Picture 1 (cartoon, rainbow, N blue to C red):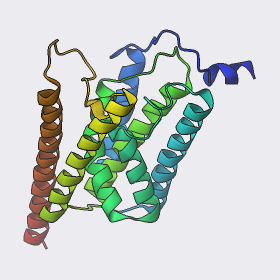
Picture 2 (cartoon, rainbow, N blue to C red; picture 1 turned 180 degrees about the vertical axis):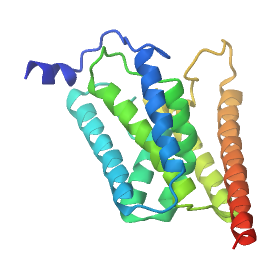
Picture 3 (spheres, helix red, strand yellow; picture 1 turned 90 degrees about the horizontal axis):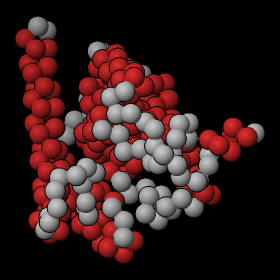
Picture 4 (cartoon, rainbow, N blue to C red; picture 1 turned 90 degrees about the vertical axis):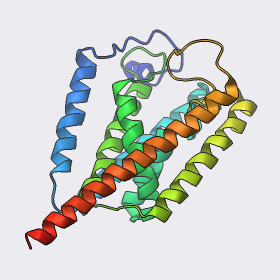
Length: 241
């Protein structure tokens, strides 16, 4: 019982996770290994879809239940407003209920967001083991695998109109986060400050516009490579059929 209370504690201490340490490298190895396995899959698997979807939603429910009970930075950190948390919810619900619009947005946000988060973890100030650490890596690992499955196996695809809608949705989201951050004095979507030090004296407006521009450029790059790969695969199938 004592260990359970410790695992779910709300009193902060020192974050002892070492970036690119042994544990981190093991997590990255597992992420890569499973990603390769999913990438080479040829047929869709409904059981796998449900499994990934249920894990993602369960992880989010447990995390937000902890935020609500512990009151740890409930408004500044505990709202589902970060890129990856929204992507996790979209991919999870999309996979469970087969909702393509959610799967498209979630996978495009998720592939970039999960890789970034796994390479450069933003861990809360708690020593191992803690609920936030398990939730962080489980959420981002399954978001990565779910996104890869959707894009490479299920091949949900995205038209030019879908891309335009995605860019409009993403831009509106970032502008909304600007207002939310002002009200809550938070840093959702990293619209107030970057997750790592890049210097002092940044103009807030220029920085915010840069974040929006970079994110939209990344989405366009994803669209280009994913659709280019899809065209190549279709040409190969036509040639050898």
